[in-house]
Length: 172
Image 1: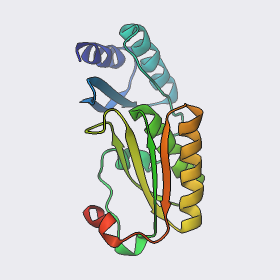
Image 2: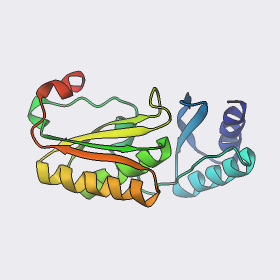
Image 3: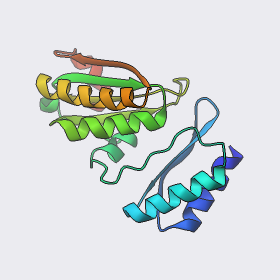
Image 4: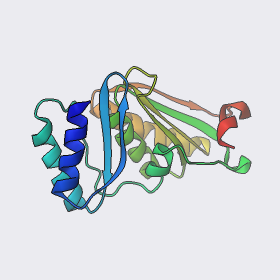
């Protein structure tokens, strides 16, 4: 945990980035998400990699992150009942890989990305939830799963064409 705080400080000193998320996650890891210009984010991540030495498990820079990723990551998305369609789920073995998978899914089709859950009470894994038309959910889940698979970290991918409304209860 101490290295996480050190890295976070080094990132803020190195470039004009904003800390969007910085917290401990399962199992004994520290997760940092920063935002800013592409060059500033790249500089901050480069600094973080040097400051952390061998403590970094995974890292990622998404130059043009989809606009739905941060609200879903912050679990601040509310779904109108008429938006509920098929339910798509992608699960990966790491927090970083689920953010990459969720971004790929959101860019691939017209879906509503409504949750990205990173590692808490999951043994370090992550999952993302999306809804939309069945075909769009299938395309988005396929894109997210391909990103997880490309990283060697895909756990599962599911599309439920007609999910029970109760599966969306806490988001409506």
